[in-house]
Length: 486
Image (tube, rainbow, N blue to C red; front, top):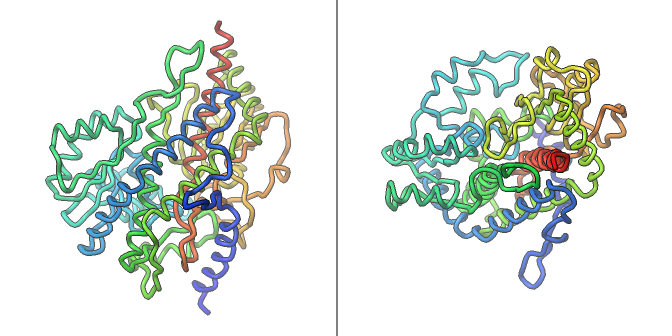
């Protein structure tokens, strides 16, 4: 047995064995019934954001037939014409499905200024993570689309959409690519007025308004961006149906394994360099809508489970942040990927934001001071270096990452932070007065969907949990500040 096959066998046992325990729905009288109620009890302002996300999951489910039709059209073009699967828009959206655990391995970013992007990063080395290298940009970026390609287009920031959407669509239409647009109904109407109805322009839309979606007493503007998470919900549900559309055509796309599980990435390398679809794979066809519905069930369970059992931690964390605002202490939001709140309409600007997928923030050491607050919304490992920096400064830290149920055979080593240490309980970590731990509760190595006969689960969950926690804490803090201003 080769090392590759041994790795797959071990990985399949660990990753898939836990997935069957996390199913969140049953079929009763032909309908999918969620175990829990559709919403959570509103005790804090941030609970409104949780319920907004749960409502959007329901809204996505209602549009599943249209999403499936779009996925069928995309699969036809990619399989029959050997087209590329590209994503475009602002950086947050265009990179969302690229090089993501549980994502389709041959996804690429459409970026006309590829050469400038490659020139701005370093060549690969053991000291920097792959996604921050010239080699990553060169491999995962396509400079021009063709008539064989499918382009998933969206913007998490409406300001970027207003500036670039029309010109982006005009170019892609001239390239004759199949465009699948994710955005608001208003944006879709604007596209239809500008370009008319086109066979190669598919519109997947939602009703979420621009700007903030939550009104808090005592605060002048609505807060919490809804469109960013809504666009991602529709995107990943589309990806679920796209995978099943490929399978209905006898093709199994390669699915990426989380780099936090084990390194070197024995599984991922062949997917990146050798083939789009897994050769000699006995594909089990999947009914239309099955993957999309199952994925939405998982997201519903994750989103609904985050706050109720950790309400005390959320209240305490919001109190720390509000006190830092009132006493003019510095606040830092240290993020991993997905949400980019810096300059996003609906974000009140409480934090200095640093976003880095490797959880490496060396600049913090020279900026954070006593009684400042660092909010880390991370992935599935404990940020040892970051925690040490905050402790040394005498500051407070709110550490949000997901606990795991199973440890990999050995810790992954990735980029500047070195070993990525996972934990099954926060009790295994230092308990100090300046620390609050919050479990993000997403799937332990991110991907969540079991594919029949395939050893690696599919589809992203982490970004949704990260969004919920960030916006919940923002809303809770604004509620405290608004009450004090009366």
